Length: 283
Length: 118
Image (tube, rainbow over all chains, first blue to last red; front, side, top):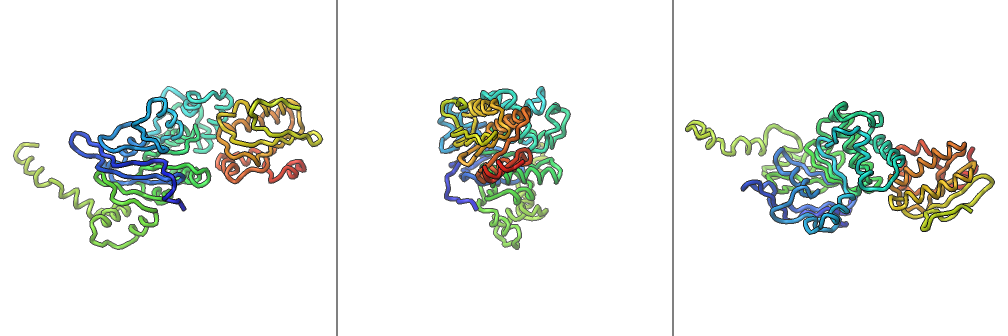
């Protein structure tokens, strides 16, 4: 059980991000406590990947701020941010491998760049990380020679190379077969429960989310609709439709139902205006 | 007496017949990795029949620490010696389990067990 009053490792405060005039994130507040697995979910375009990119400092907010390990990352100089950067790992959706390097070389790269370890020691660490993700036999293959799922596992091995204390995952299960997906979930849980690694996971794969989460946050239209322990979301998923728009929307998402507030909203938003515009030749 | 680096993680080395019992304490991490490997290599150079690493005082170990132990296992095997790990905390033990190295190393609860093993 995670102590939610514990030390936050990641803290998002009043975050607002606009693309053109549209608020993709609209006042998001979120804390991730040391050692917990926080799953951030929501439909396509809800802002969850944008939120993740703010947390890792790859884009900057229009308002609000992000703290990592107690430090506002917008206030850090390059050296200070580099020091923080070594303490977290990122698994990108695509794996984000360098195509000109073998899988093993990709995993060795952060160790070569950030440590003075000799080649033999780095080779041992690379072998260990590849074994962790079940990819030892692929060490000498090029990214073009492996499947999408293998690329993702290789990306995870690289994210683990420096023994990060916090791992950010962008859709870790997407595109994986069920066994590989369950294996990755198990590894994420082992890292969290046995080694105390903090995880922030953006996903819309509900089976995986309910396996790995300590707490969950539901994002919709750039706002957090609900944040709480997994048990609350399980109860919501398993409960009856209530007529409360927010609860029913979350329930529809968790169950993957074809009917509900999400569907009604998609079908109603501006349809009349659009079709009349089309008829008038304005589209 | 084996020479140790300043601020060595190795607190003590005692010999029981031809077995070297090495007490390790502190954080076995990147900051100490190269010196730790050098200290262990100096002990292996004395050609023990059995190398017993007592890790009871280890508060944290990262991948570079594990890699150091793997390299030392390789060196020990090369001279026909066995290598044993004892006194691991639950956390360190978990690290070996997750990385599946608990099947690669001989792991015992106590030094006496390790010394009595074949």
